[in-house]
Image (cartoon, rainbow, N blue to C red; front, side):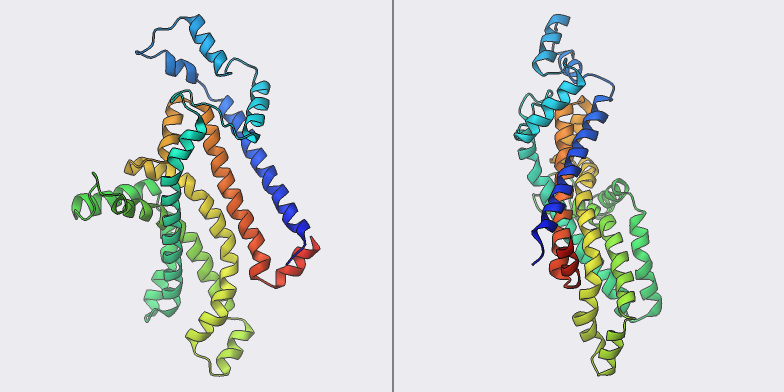
Length: 315
C-alpha cells in the first residue's frame, strides 16, 4: 500500500526512542540518593557485617562502575533479561508478568470508556436541543482536563462508596471494583479527545462538500455520519495514541488510590525500596507501549486517508 521504506523508517525511529528512554532512565536512576541493597539487608530482620553487605552488592552488580552497569543492563535487556528485583528476590520479568494484566485491563477499559465519553460529548455538543446546553457540553472537556486523577478517585470513593453505598470499597468483586478506577482514568483522558473532535467537527462542517450535500437534500444526520465524522476522526488518532500511552502512567496513581494490584502498585513499592531494576523495567515497558501504539497509529494513517498514501510512498 505504501513504500516499505516508510515502515522501516518509522520502526528505526521507534527503536531510537526506546534506546533514549532506557538511557535517560538509567542516568536518572543512578542519580537517585540511597542504596537499595542497604535498605533491603540492613533492616531489623538482618544483621550483616560490612563484608557480607559488600558481597551481596557485588552479587547484584551494584559495585561496578556506572558505565559498565549501563552496558551490562543494555545487553541483558536486548537478550530479554530484565535483571533481578533486589527487594523481591525474583526476576523482574516475573514481577511484570504477574502485574501487567491487571494494569492493561484497567487501561484498556479506561480507554474505551474515554472514547465513548468523548464521542458522546462531541455528538451532544452539536445535536443537543438547546443552545445553552450545547455551550455547556462544549466547555465540559476543559473542566475534565483540570481535574487531578487522585482527587477524582477520592471523590468517587467518597460519593459512590461512602455516601451512596453503591460500590463497596472492600471486596467489591473483580469487575465491579473496576468501575470507579476506570472512571477515574477515563474522565481526564476523554477531555482532550473530545476537545479535538469537537473542533474538527466544527471545521469539517464548514467545508464546501458539506454544503453541497445539504443542498442536494441530505439530512444533517446523514451528512454527519457519512461525511463529517470520518474526516473529523483522522486527527483524533494521533492524540488518542499518545493518551493511551499515558494511561499506564495514570494507572500508578489510580491503583494506589484504589488499592489495586498492578504495575502502579509495583512501581510504588519499587520507589519506596529504590529497586532500580524494577523501576527501569517499568519505564521501558511504558515507553514500549507508548511507542508501539503511536507506531501503529502512524502506519494506519495512510491506510485510512488516501491522500497520505502518496506522501508515505515518497518517504
